[in-house]
Length: 434
Image 1 (cartoon, one colour):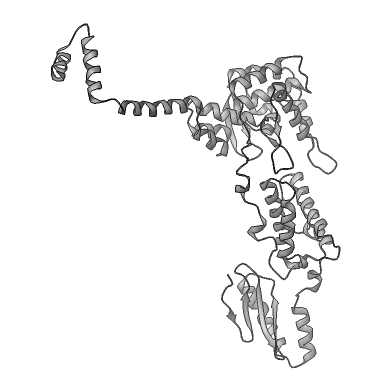
Image 2 (cartoon, one colour):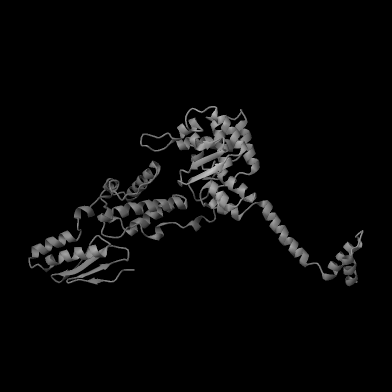
């Protein structure tokens, strides 16, 4: 909804939309003109418009024409910024997105390149990208069998890029419309989710990690990483990059500053984990508990993008396949398979086991380090045994309600009659029932 107009000595300030830039409308030689002032701030807009009033009032028609020509764009050069040249301008802007990883930085460029290929016209300018164009682009994404989150991330990236390049446009951000994004309910029929391991499956994992017939690179360290994940509930990166200065074997404590959240947690070391950490101490070559895995995980390509994390993650999937589980499955409507079992499943299992053991939710959060959906999921469904008890309790209440009064009296009489020694109270109850 547009804001109220602001009347000046000559002309009027207005907005086309409540969140848009101010426009200045005035008349020259009987012709109405409206130009964008390229600012959303009212004070700045008034100052820019008032600076133009003396020129508008001038009698020299050439002065007026020169002014209007300039004012229409306030920077003709900016309006003519070609889409194919825009990325170089964007990456030099201090307001650009600053992703934490090189991978996400590359994703911004890849998404913008995808838009350029869709437009497929080297003469197209930033100012030519209209809501109609962005809607067509969003429709093309919908045909690519992308997950809802993937689709929406692309739209968010482009929205940010065009927000940074707003000075090269005389209209609103074309990626601002909510209709460009997909809704989560579009995938509500997808029941394929990340699964936790059962205790039996966890035991099988530990068995194959001890079995010499199964081979994987740096297997002793893979085993240690699995133990850390299984008995602390930490994420993959936090496990494979755990350092010895964060481990106190005497006090049986591990300190983790989580890479994803920056949150620091302290975790007791279980006896099983302690045993494998003592073994790992024997191969200590640097400060990493899993030195060779850590080195491989941190490997980067020539562009600075981490490529080692995928290699180590593939190694971590091998034990899962060894016990007969398929890590990923095909999901209708998605190009890529969806992961159901992975190292992260150990985190789900950890929370699930805590919930079934009756560990308070706050205690679990203090260990895994975040109020995540994992905790909400498992503390809503706290295990088969607890559910069976609940059903049994409800069933029992219905069964009790179906017994008639006469049946209840007969049961009490039978109990009293079978007593070897009757108390005065039992005799009195028996007399009342008679």
